[in-house]
View 1: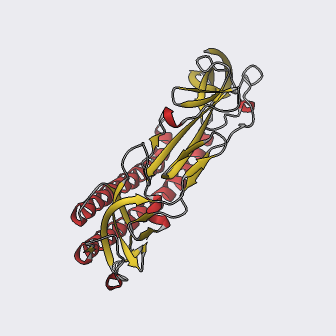
View 2: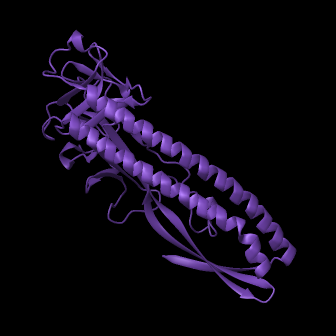
View 3: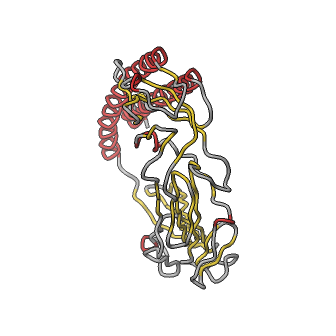
Length: 325
């Protein structure tokens, strides 16, 4: 890792300038207080509405005895079912010849690039401030492009401006549990990705692409990559057909039945119920998980609102601190 340092000087602001900055801080502080108050008010209403929706759903959900028949008697009802994911099509990545019988296949591309690290140290010297800025550079695998044009020393640490291969997400067109077709919202909840084993990675026809440690490497030497080299990994979610990866993924679902479709259920309280969890869970277990999540989200937003209030009050009182100094 190489590095260099720059030194700049900044004039310290005068009394009137600091008063002006404090007045701006007061306006920003007042705005933060308004935002925090609105956020906390909205959060309490959201928490109550979600709790009512979950209680409502728990009291009316119907557990299906079979997933092989879509009974008309349950049309429009909130239903609970358990079963394996099923899809007809196999997901395929033509670039690397990778295929998997799953709901989702994700290709992630990383490039070996220069990364700049910046550290600033300030020293008060009479009427001015000396700012020493240290820049260090390391080579790292990054999934996003790092723009070296903005580096302090971009001439000696240049990164490519494009990637030869891009990220790609593939998704099965239709996903079923038994006779029931999942909505887009339910499919979105199938998000537990696993690395695709080496046995699924076929050698590329490109002589410059090598398989090493679970990656496709666009590199002459994967152990000693150069800036601009690429590596590609694959992950899958939701085994939905016969596969040596393992058994079909079992899921538990709560949603509205409409014919053979599973759709969002609109509660009287106002929320949409469209729930999917991995494994075999009863309605009680699913709703308990949702209640725990609602509690965690509620407290998380509360802490965020309180933090905004604290920052707002600190900015408002900055004028007193400035005058006192």
